[in-house]
Image (cartoon, rainbow, N blue to C red; front, top):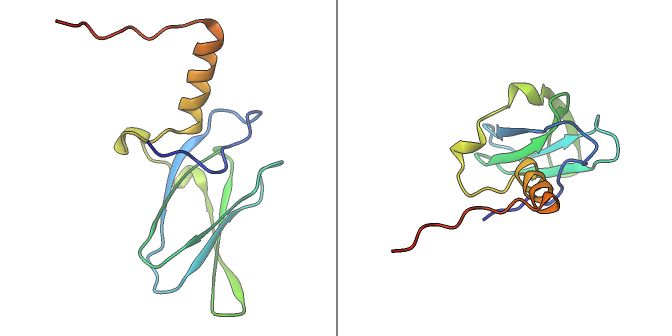
Length: 116
């Protein structure tokens, strides 16, 4: 079961599950800067797929560069990177974690599987 390192702040509306693929031959830096009180930055190697959650209004900045410099090469609305979370079963998204926390607070109990 995977967990997110930097979950979307709890004051944000329901986040969306996103996927970005580095289709270049260069290392890239993916960064979201337009969400208050949240730091999101990842290195994305050539051919690597980056899965993350973000608010629908977030913008993913892609910085491509060489050894000592990087150039902003793209700015992609996260709403264009949205995918169905069900495509990746077993991934604990922040929205699923929030649902579980709310259920625990309300005393909701998951039904047990029937035993033979």
